[in-house]
Amino acid sequence: MTGATGDIGSALLTRLHASGVGPLRGLTRYASQAAIPEGVEAVEGDFADPASLKPALEGVRSLFLVSRLGPDAELLGAARQTGVEHVVLVSSITAETHPHLGPAAENLAVERSLKESGVDWTVLWPTQFASNTLMWAAAIRTGGTVRAPYQDTALPTVVHPADIASVARVALAEPGHRGRTYALTGPEPVNDRQQAEAIAAALGRKVPFAGIRRQQARAQLVAVFGEAVADALLDVTGGDVHDGLLAVRDTVARVTGGPARPFWQWGTENAAAFR
Ligand SMILES: NC(=O)c1ccc[n+]([C@@H]2O[C@H](COP(=O)([O-])OP(=O)(O)OC[C@H]3O[C@@H](n4cnc5c(N)ncnc54)[C@H](OP(=O)(O)O)[C@@H]3O)[C@@H](O)[C@H]2O)c1
Image 1 (cartoon, helix red, strand yellow):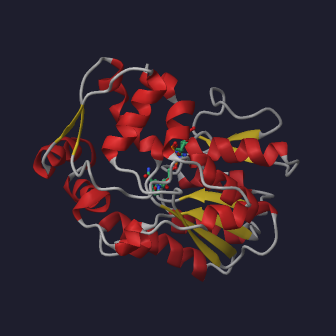
Image 2: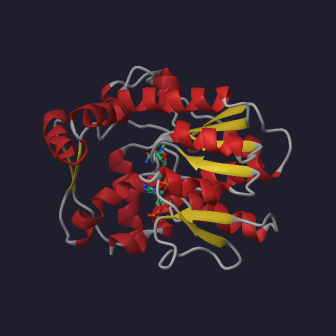
Image 3: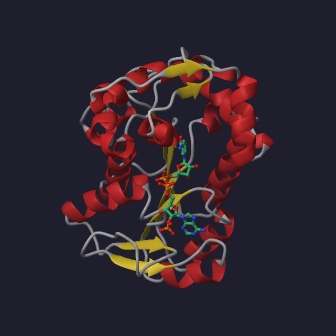
């Protein structure tokens, strides 16, 4: 498992371990400090040092790959050589909805490498994560105002990375999911203002919210991500919304047998991060 200490990876490891699937191996850059569930082998590797990844792949049959941590094509080549049989790849719904944008084009290139590798594959296309609202945590903790553009644009946010993990668990552990691409959304559209309200309800206090213009938001995002990614983020979160991005998909329920979690559930479970 790549991204083993991340939002999706840690939830997935816990689920796989609980269901008796294994042995399991989680990749992290910091094996001695990583919070990897008991019974899971932590192995150290860094995408910035591709040579460190090959030993991590020895003996692996199924690989969970969080895309774009590093040179994915190189990793997939190594995976094929070491005998990996199946890869579950976390790409993004923007590969379908906004293929012209830079990050989406990169994801599509990884998907192509995977499909050409000869290894069985399952591709996950999540929409944006509920956990993205953690970028508001510092403002909310200090009683400040959450500021966001497109505050009234309601998108079917994937409300819980655990839903992505649940779909990945089924794809890895059960038959019938190879050669499939699963677009994953939450159960209902929710806009930024409503997400801030859900966090406020979980905290039991008001969270001030203000809409801002795209240019203001862009200046902040450019400082962190650079121009191309900032523009792409703004387009997929409200600037270039169309039916494909607005559609609620029933994939989580179809694959896992349980309903997709609403945003307020993620807010309630993660309220501590905003206190
Ligand atoms: N956020 C969104 O709205 C959104 C939407 C669609 C798709 N996605 C995709 O979702 C994925 C992110 O998943 P997530 O939220 O579960 O991740 P996350 O919580 O951000 O955690 C990142 C994980 O990547 C690992 N990592 C980072 N750099 C690494 C490196 N150089 N070498 C090895 N491991 C490294 C970290 O491991 P250590 O720190 O332990 O080394 C950690 O486990 C990305 O592929 C992203 O493109 C995100």
